[in-house]
Image (cartoon, rainbow, N blue to C red; front, side, top):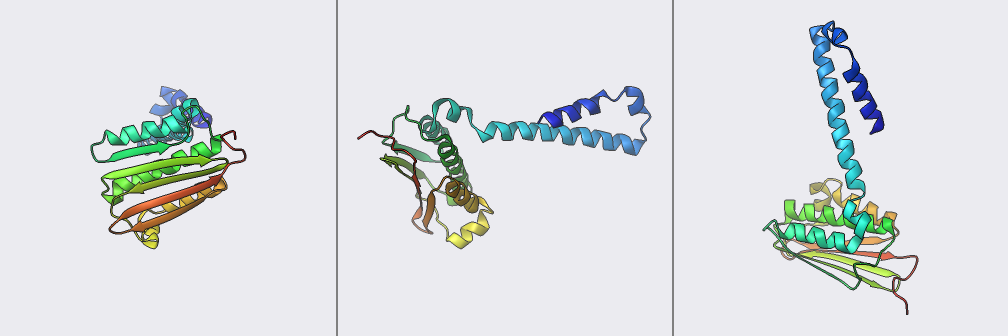
Length: 194
């Protein structure tokens, strides 16, 4: 981001005399380059913002998932429920929080684009150091092979995210009965005291 901003400043600092002496073709190239750099800066800002959502950083996974569910409930296309045995104050290791949140966003995007679902249920349960997270919809499911083709790298990205935190993800989908995604992660330490 800083390199792009510096590049933009250098492009803008070219004197008007230099710009006026450019050929018509070079002037067009200069304008295109300025636009490309500005677009890259904008994309970089968005990526940076999306790497760690502010709500996730400030409040943790539970309030962030509640907020995401609320957002999608307000689209009038879906009814979403979220259930958990964790409190809003309990924090899971940040890498687990980020990856579960990103997978949830990806799942919601896929549901909106492909499933025609009316209801989505999220359930996050933790017993000692075993975390189980399920996302279930009542939409038009998919065959796993079709899903891989239809969603591009989406399903593979979800699998990679969950494996990066030492977990597993399982897709159980049927054309008529919707999709159930089950994620299991073993945490280093239990969240609850015995």
